[in-house]
Length: 241
Image 1 (cartoon, rainbow, N blue to C red):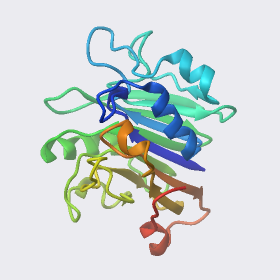
Image 2 (cartoon, rainbow, N blue to C red; image 1 turned 45 degrees about the vertical axis):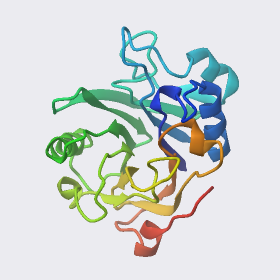
Image 3 (cartoon, rainbow, N blue to C red; image 1 turned 90 degrees about the vertical axis):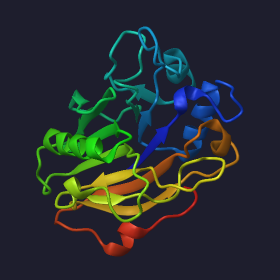
C-alpha cells in the first residue's frame, strides 16, 4: 500500500497561481492508495476546499473521506484524506489538538489499520502536546498497526519526537521544504513497528517543485504478522516512485 502526505499550501504554487489541477497532476504521478493533505482548505469563512470537490471526483479515481468541518470544506483544520476508489474504510474520527494555533488531526481505520493525518504546530512545546494527543487517539499501543502522516514542522534532524519514541518509528524520507530549494525534512511518517516499510521517498519533479512550497513524500508499507521492521527498510529513500 502506498500512502502520500502533501502540504499543498491551499493550491497556491511558487508562481503565486492557485492551480488545483496542478496539485492533482502531481498526485496522479505518485499513484498512492491513500492521500493525506495539509492546508487543503482556505482559512476564511466556511473554509472552502482549495481543491474543488467536483474536480477531485471528476478528474481522479479518489474518494473523499468525510472529515470535513463544513459542507464546502475538504477536511478538518486543513487536514484531508483521499482514498483510491474501492478501498474501504471502517470508521473516521477528527480531533482538535492543543496549542495556541488552531490545529487538528483526522483518523481513518482501514481493516484494522489506523491512518492519522495531521499538521503539527510551529513550537516544539505544542508539538509534543499534540503528539501525545495523537498517541492517545490511536490507542497508545505499539502492537496495533497505525501510521501518522503529515507536516510535522520539526526542523531538527536528531530530536523533537520524544513523545513517540516508544511507540512509533519516525521516517522523514527527504528534504521537503522549501520546494524550490529543499533544506528541511518537515514532512513524513510515524509507523508502529508492526508495519513493514518497503520503500519511501519524495516526489521532486519539475511540476512538484512549483506546485506548493512543500514537496510530497510517500511511503510503501505492508502489515507484518510479527513486531519489528528492518533498519535498512526504515532508512530507505529515493527521489521518485
